Figure 1 (cartoon, rainbow, N blue to C red):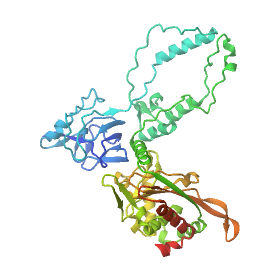
Figure 2 (cartoon, helix red, strand yellow; figure 1 turned 90 degrees about the horizontal axis):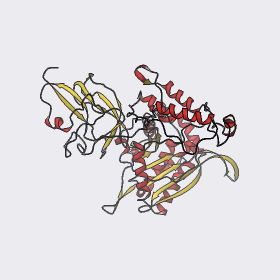
Figure 3 (tube, rainbow, N blue to C red; figure 1 turned 30 degrees about the vertical axis):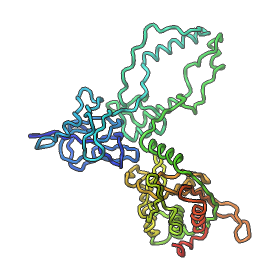
Figure 4 (spheres, rainbow, N blue to C red; figure 1 turned 45 degrees about the vertical axis):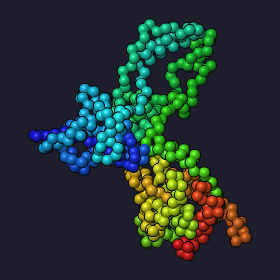
Length: 483
């Protein structure tokens, strides 16, 4: 490329006030041609997984950090050779490309933060990778096995273990196992450390079959004779010390790094629990008529192609209750010592995803018709399941619903989403004996729980809101008269 210069693309602040993100996956490699707007990598922040597009055309010269590295906002992550003009001085000085011989070393950081495209600039701290367990040296494993076999063959073990003939050389730093993202997720779900898996794919790539083989090997009964008790003959060892059940993993513990969405959720819940004084009220309600209405709406042409379920009517019932009791839709401003009443409802829906609990919200849910609300709920759920929820979708919520009933749970005492004053938990809907028109009959029943911030919501207001939600679900025709 003639008259070329190198442009450094920096880790942007993809949310509001985020300071770091982990590189989950690179979609390009050195030598690839990229165009303006092309997605080059996927990163995970404390709020969501986000794809990053490159802002110019050129050829990838260097990827400064491998997958799995946590990088500070403002740090250069990729160098692209572009045609024409000199590279901006600020980009050149921000982060120098890492030498080819040492790809693991982060680029040098400036003494102070500098202005960048977005975010807070380059941090003075260096990037870091989460520590990994080092694989045990194979020679050390063989030596230990030989010593144990000799002890078992001679009966009693000596009081003091013999010193090894020569100290084993320290293991070299383990290289990051090569595996595709779906395989990494499979290993994570199964609790398998990829560093312990023997790869069989091309160029040493770990495959799905390799992960399953590692699980099977860990669950298989031990083939070596267990350690014999002192003064007992080796032949009696198996009877005295039976092998562990095959259903248990050979590892007694698994450590999972707390990062990304889970780390942010933990911090938010601790802050919520110890900042807002929580009060939770409960009500058990007959929702038989609501369930019948759900079935009717599924046949309605206006809802064709839309997901219609009890959560749709529960969401609408809560919106009706908020309209009748607007003071519940508020927040506490500690700095100004004011209660901020919102005249709009951004309805949050708690969603469990592989990356942890997230709470995206439907903007201006109060202004949506029932079909529009159904469409928004369907889009919210599918986007969350795909892991594509944007940070903006999780900001600005005013009140939240958490549906624990999908897990077969009757109800719970939910913690407030930070910045909100109320959250409604919905329990499992199931047939129960119920007094209906003076007779005990099987009815569809559920339990609702409303937690609220007692600084701005007193017992009367919280009770009114919960009672209104229950009344709508018991008699859904109130949607017409109250809405």
